[in-house]
Amino acid sequence: MTIRIVTDSACDIPQALVEKYNITIVPLTFSFGDKEFIDRQSLTTEEFWQHCADSPTLPQTAAPAPGQFTQAYRTLIQQGATGILVISLSRELSATMQSAETGAKEPGVSVPIRFVDSRSASMGQGITVIAVAKMAATVASLDELEAAANNLASRSKVFGALDTLENLKKGGRISNTKAFLASALAIKPIIEVRDGKLEEGGKERTRGKALAFLIEKIKSAGEISDLAVLHAQCSDVDSFVAQLKTIYNGEIIVSDIGSVIGSHTGIGTVGVTYHVQ
Image 1 (tube, rainbow, N blue to C red):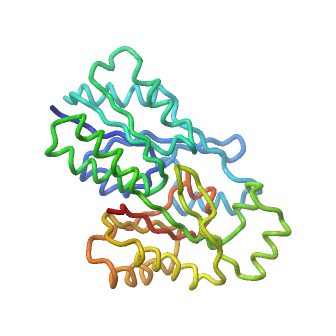
Image 2: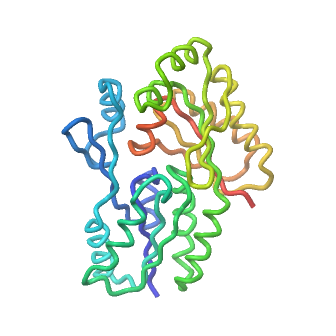
C-alpha cells in the first residue's frame, strides 16, 4: 500500500522537509482588504510582515475550498497513492478539516482517506505531520498510521512568547489601553495551544524572562521528542536554539511562523513545540 500524507499550510513545515518527506500541502488564503494571497506562495515572509505593519487591521484568513483538497487527492491517486492520511489544523481554529472531508466525497477520489485533527497549529501540527510522514515510508497500514497520528496529536505541546501586543490589539482581543499599559511595563504574553485552542499561558516581564519560561517548559516536560522552534523574524532565535541544545540532545527543527498563525501572534513571536512521552 502506498500511503501519502496531506496537510494544510498552517503547519509551517520548512519547505526542505516538505520535499524530503513527500508531504502534500493544501494552502489556506489570507487577504488584506480586497487583495487576496495564497499562503506560502504569494508573498515572501518579509513581504507578509511588511503588509501587517502597514495594515490597520489583521489579515483575514480563509480555509481552503473543498475543491482544492479534491484536486490534491486526485493528483496523489494519479501518482499511485492507494491510501491518503490527512492531518489538519485544529478543528477548533479553522474550517480546514471540514473542507478536507467534503473534498473527499467528490468523483475521482477512489482510495480510502482518513482524517486526523492535529489539535494544534503551526509546527505543533507540523511535528506530527513530519513524524507520520517518516513512518509512511515503512508502515503499509492506513489504520496504523491513523492511530499513530492521533496518538502524537494527543501528546503535542505548543508554547509561544509574543513580543508585541499590536496584533492582539488589531484583532480586538485587547483594548488600546491594555496594550499601551502592557507595552509600557514590557509584559510579554505567553500563549499555549490547549485542547486545540489558543489559550493564555501566562505573562512574563521582559523578553529574556519570556524565553527563559519556554526553556523551563522543556526542562520540566520530562522525556520529549520532535522538538521544534517556531519564530517570526526573530534575530535572537539562534542564541535561543543554542540554549535549547544544552538541555536537549536530539535534532531541533527551526521553522518560520507563517501568515495563518503569524497574523494573530505578531512579529517577534518565538515558540517551542514537542511531543511528550
